[in-house]
Structure formats: C-alpha cells, structure tokens
Length: 528
Image 1 (cartoon, rainbow, N blue to C red):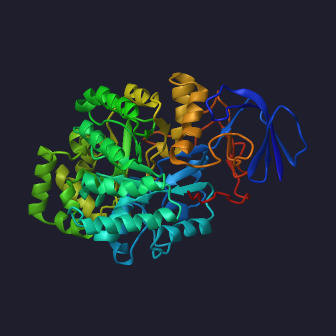
Image 2: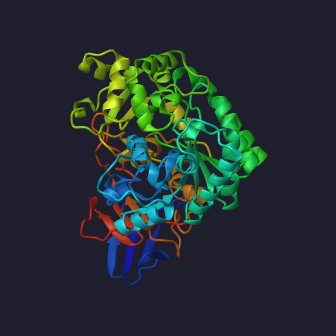
Image 3: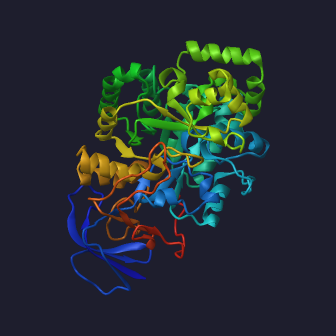
C-alpha cells in the first residue's frame, strides 16, 4: 500500500524549520520525503496543513483502558500515536496472584477497574501480550512500576526493605525489563512506593542503568520540600548512573513558588555534573490524581483493605485530621496547598455518588450536610478509595517557564475515568494552539521537537519521533491556524479542532477529523 501526502509543510521533528514537500508511505514505513510526485495507491492533498511525526505522550494512564477501550479516542484524536504506560510506580504488572483484589482497589483511583478483563496475567510479558490481543489504536510502551515490584517482593507494609528484599526486587525488575519495558517508574506519594528509602531506589536503578533504561519519577515532594526532593532524585541518578526523568514537573502552592529559581539551578547543576536529566509537563495550572493521596501515608499501610478499617475508626480519623492540619515532614499535603475548595471530584465507581462528580470537596460536604473531613473520609470509604480528583496549584507564567527548558517534553498525565481533567482530550493541541500560535512561547519547530523526537530520544524509542525514510509511518496533519483544545474543567470531554489526519504505522485512522471505525487498529506494543 503506497500513500502519498502532497503539498504539505513538513516539520520533521528534528528542530529544523518547516519546509514544503511530499511524503510517501509504504505499508507501515516512510519511504520518501521530497518534492517529487510518485505513483501511489492513495493521494492526499495536504495544502495548508503541517505534516509532523505522531505525538508521543510520555505520561499516560491508559493502562486498563487499552484493554477495555482500545480505540483510545481521546488520545488519537489529539494526534497522539504513542504513549507510555506504567507510570507513578503503580500499574497493571507485575501482579502476583495473592494481591490481585487489594491491588485493583489501590489502582482504581488512577486507572479505573473492570471485571471485563482477566486479571490473572501475573507478569509484564503476559500483560503486554494482552495489549497486543486487544489491538490498540496507538503504540504502547511500558515502564516497570516500582510499587508492583515491591509488592511482589515484600507486600504492602510500611517498612524499609531489607538487603534480601532489595535483591529480590532486583531479580523481579530484571525479569520485567527483559520483557521489553523502557525503564522503572515510581511515585513516592503513592503506596507502597512511598515507603521506600533512597538507598532502595539507588540499588534498583543500578539494574535499570545496566539496561540503559530510564528512571521516571513522581518525586517525593512537589511542594514544601521540593528542593530536598529534587536533591534525592539527583542523588539516585548520580550514584546509580541511571537516566532521570521527572514526571509532570511543577511546584504546588503559592507558598512554594519561591523555590522555582532553586529548582532551575538544580537542573543546571545536574547537567554540568553529567547527570542525565529530563522531565515532562502538561500545559495546565491544575493537576489530577487519586483522591486518596490527601490522606497521610500511614493511613494506607497494608493496602486498601487496611485503609478501609482505618476510615471507620474514630481514633484513626482523628489522627488523620491532625496530620492534615499540622502536616508531616516530607509529606505533600494536598489540602494544605490546594484547599478543600480547590480540589474537585472527577470520578467515583458507585452510582449513588455520581452526583458528586464535578463538585469541590467543600461543595460535596455541603451537599451531604457533613463537615468536610467526615464527608471526605466517608466518600473514600464508600468508594473503596476509587475516587479521582483535580487540584489547582500554579500560574501560567510558571507553566511557560518550565515549558521553555531544554529538559522538557509534553505529556497528558490524563486519568480517563469519570469527568476527567481536560488534558485527557486536549493537552497537545493546547500546547500548539495556545502556547505556540497565540503566546509564541516557542517556535513551531521547537514545539514539534518537544512532542516527537525529544521524548523518543529520552526514552530510547527507536524509528519514531522524526519524519525520515525508514522510520515508522506515524504522522499527524494539522491546520496551524485552527488547532486548539476545546475541553474545559466544566466540560472536559471535547475533542480538539484542527487535527485533520492521523496515521499509525501507515494506517489512516483519523481522516478529515473523523475517527475511521472501518479501519483496522494498528498500534504496536513497543519493546526496548
């Protein structure tokens, strides 16, 4: 099958300026780029459009949806052709048999839950095979989640790992990296990752470095102690030799904006020292995660079943309130930096609580005629911790400051359940429309580099991220004058404008802005 795309402005992902030309696709590869017209089975006139590599989302939470909703329309309709799963140290695999029930509850607030799949796959190799059988619309890469590895080695208890347990984690990690994962992720605000000491992470990252993988980290603090947190991460990179990639880089809370200059200085010092550092960012001033993170870490000790017991215990509730109001050193206290009125419920699993979706914690308490703490604790208990949230924390100036750093590439970090953050549907078009066309924070070629070749090079994804002969035919055609996101926090589930055509491994899956249900889904599972 030969497809020629003619009369386009090509932004090839390398950082070079746009240039006019034609692109020839043969089967799943790009075979020619130039001015010449050649015979083809299909000819597409791209006059007025830019042709760019498919976008790469380095922080995704489609881990369950890729099995249950493999079309992944919120992603492909904004031009994403490759995404990276396994984020924040808690994901689908490995999943040892004794922990399936408890882990599903722990995972539900981030990635959802479903009885429609077989959860007895146990390993990353089997999970990736299940993705292949589901035939996703886009390409899928995977990171080994630290929490899953720790759970298999030593359970969900709040305790430091012994030397023997660290050795066992290293063995599990090697097994999962051999299955094709691109590195290790952790989320040091999520259990059981939060229970790990720095030394545990250094030893695990020595294994990752041996595979030339990346260490992708939701760091221990993005608020009051962010400088100390960054120093911990850079120490891990220094002592293990691993490539460090900060997830959703930011600082939370007005009282912590003063640390931005120090954060940038640490990045500069790391580069000068030779530590390989990168980060991703979503282009919004609000974040999204599971509501359970507002509780102190000790409340989650032993997993969700133990959390349920504590949420019913008046003494444990009293202790939680004390820790939220007075803080714990080194713990990111979401209620302290966002407040009850700036944290919004985005998803629940029960029908009874669906009317609460879209309300702030303050509004939810008022609706239920409860004080704010009792309303919060009761909701988490009723939903078995499977509640998603959005929290507001920053400013547009900060977004642009981080966006312009050389370490930066874009991501969605989108939770797909319920009433999601609008980044699920519009992060990449927002980047190109608002920050490139309207605010000129970056040139078009700089921006395309940051969403294509830069993330591919960062994670070691080969033959993608750049339009060149021999690379896979992942392409996006868009109108630079029209591209924009449409989703809002009130009505997030809106596809963007300006994305005309999307090809995944040569298959024309979005045509004239419409998803083609008649076309076969042609995403590949990528293995390092």
